[in-house]
Length: 316
Image (cartoon, rainbow, N blue to C red; front, side):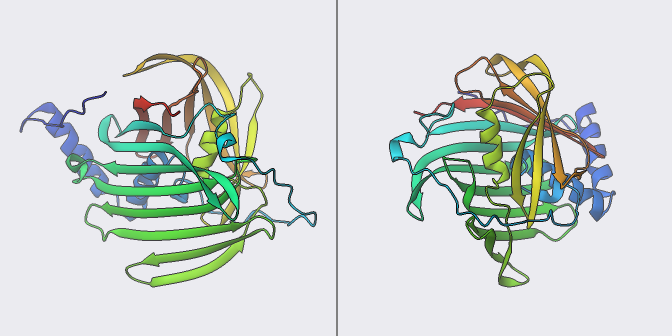
């Protein structure tokens, strides 16, 4: 068990001055850079779920195959049988920006559920900044994904976001997505306080994963130097290529001990054009049966954003 200590600093101390200086600097940056921080928070909090950490760009061209889908049906008992993670797994991460603790995120692999007649893996995240960080930024993001065991393709997705930058109106949003891989279509329902309910449909690359499911997918792979891995991703009306490049094999120290790990540099592409702003790295354990996601680092203009594993509960 990890005991979380309350963040306290004395008035007039060096930490107060440093913390206050960073708060003032962030609040003076304007909406563009505050949005960049919000995107970076969501990047670490939701492990790439929120697209605001990525550059905008045109849709990747989607050509829907004329051949029917080939889906392997499996039993409930087989849903997690071949994966390093099992139902009930819960990983807790400490989020930080520029060396300051910002909040926590819980990522879980939940019990299988049926959707459209098929058993699915269920992945979720619940991330929140701490009260001590409210003078800089407050955010609470939640997401849940239904992932097909046969290929990790996403079938259903829900995300709820509440983000409150300093001196700005809160951003509140709820989104429900249903994925029709057969016809390459995503049906979307949305809600926010200003616009109320909305709906729409978008193109889908058949077999695309959600970003949260993709991180679990990367944990199932083995890596060799120079051998890049790719996966199709759908986020925020866009179809991306996510590329994972193993750039180092190293030891990572965490509150849970020291782990052998592979360091992956993540790149996002629309077609052949790289789209992301800044570098994104993740570390995955290589010497454990569970291959835990150990940490995430996102480099943006206003500093480094980190998510570090501080507590881990294996599934069964």
